[in-house]
Image 1 (spheres, helix red, strand yellow):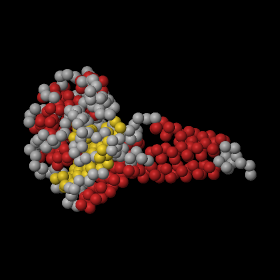
Image 2: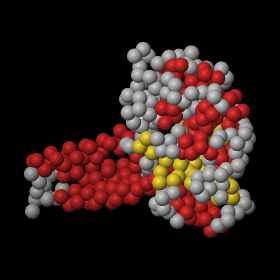
Image 3: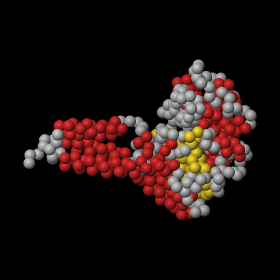
Image 4: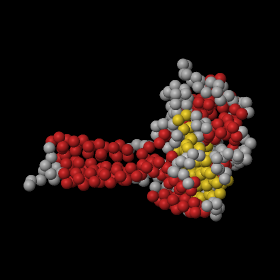
Length: 445
């Protein structure tokens, strides 16, 4: 573990974060992480933890280059807003006004670039598993859009998180400006904000090795689109981006009114996202802290990588967390809980990921209790309906962990990377006990 000597204004928070991260690296089997703490709009502490490449024993370093996945979305929104303020884009015109290389199917209801950035265009999530080796052929963005685009709701009907929508925003930006998205974003956003190593184009140099939900190393990959999740950056790069979004930040890329518009809630968020956030602006999730202050954030999950950025623009507080492990959500939530405590507010919404751990532990205890109760019941007289019911419940309790183990990805794996196998094992034990209830002969008195 490497912990650089930079000190936060409150070193006790740095110590607490270090303890939490070190514990979580072990308990959740997370390869490594880098964390940056921001106070008064300035990065004041950076910590690098764990390993960049466990197979070679390489320690994580503070300057490691990560896939930051969906943190690409707020950066894309900044780029679109910068072009709009400069008169090169109209956020409220139908996207078909710009599109040249691909058009939505005939009869598709019109939608705008603003709606794409707000996640209200009504477009489906898309194929987030479309990945290609950096040196391998991959479809062009128009080709990918032709296969991936699907409307699931009327434009403006509500929030619908969509990688496809952001990749379409990339295509709109390119067709409107006549420039390559990666080149434009580097010149107009990343370099002006001091994001020195950030890029939407593959470099691959010095990157840690990503690790999937089973802890296996992940080979480098690229998506067909870049705007939704294709950016690579260091934790320092993301911290500079986060600092630029603070009130009174010393940046001349966007007007203060434009930054406020990016952060302003535009649509309420429901479903699974609604468990951890309240709204969505332009490329930013939004929530109101327990003391009334507004916070904005975004996170990312890819194959083998996870990221999170959370800021309180009014006070200049923020935190950035990057990991080369897909098992890091509970670690992120625990870090965010410590950070919330340091701000004197109730835990931010993303800490609710930890509720799943509490529920899982209760579930494991209940299933083990059921297994013991079933062993006792198997020695008692049972009616035929009771035997049938026990057999049916046993089949369900045994079937779901077997089915889950065969899946490449389940939301359950992300929020319970260390506990879901125990939950599955407890379910199997309970199933075994109930099978005895169903089939074991009754013991004579």
